[in-house]
Length: 281
Image (cartoon, rainbow, N blue to C red; front, side, top):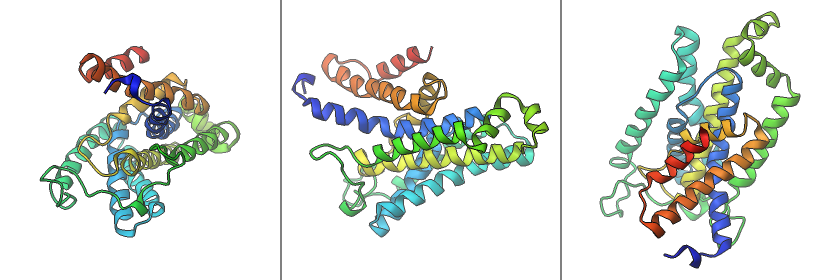
C-alpha cells in the first residue's frame, strides 16, 4: 500500500498508539534510573503484564480488571530482581535481562499450549479479546484508545512525584549520592524495591495496553522491542517525565515511518533499530 494513500488521521492515530506503551515503559525506566538502578528487563515485565492482563480481562470481560492484573504481574516479575538484589546483592542488570528471556519463552509456551486460539489455524497466537475487554476507543475510526490519556496522566504524576514529593527526592539522592542518602536516613533497599516495583508495574501496564489495544490478542512478537526502546526514550528525554511525552512520539515515528519505508522501498525491518541506535548515540 502506498504511504500517500493512507489518511493523515490514521497516521497520527497510529503514531500516538505506538507511543503509548513506549511512554509508560520509559517512565518506569526513568524512576529506576534516577534511583541508581538499571532495569534491562522491561521487555519481560511487559510480557508478564500482558499475559496476566489478558487472562483476567478475557475471563472477566473487563479491561479494568485486566489493567489491575497487568500491573500486579509486572510488579511481581520486577520483585524477583529486587529480592535478589536486596537479599543476596545480585546485580539487577543481569537478573532483569535474563528474566526477559524467560518471559519470552514462557509466552511462546503459553501460545502453543493453554492460550492457543483453537480457531487460529494452528498459529501460535491467543484468542481475540472480547469487545467488552478491549480498551475504549477515544477517536472513532482509528485504534486510538484511552491508554494514551492514562499515559499522559501518569507522566504528570511522575513529574509531580519527582519534583515535589519526598519519594522523588529520595530516589534522586539515592541514585546520585548514595552516601548522602544514608546520612539523610534514606533506606537504600526500600528505594531499590519501590523503584523496581513502579518500573515493573508500568511495564506490565504497557504490555496490556499493547495487547488489548492495537494487537487485540497475544502474539509471539508482542513487545516489539518496546522494552529496550524505553531506555532510549528515557535518555533522549534526559530522564524528565514531560520530556518522555515528546521523545516517545519521536521514537514511535521511527516505528510507524519504518513500516512505511519497508513497504515503499523494500528495506529490511532492522532499518528501524538502526535509526533508533543513531538517535541514542
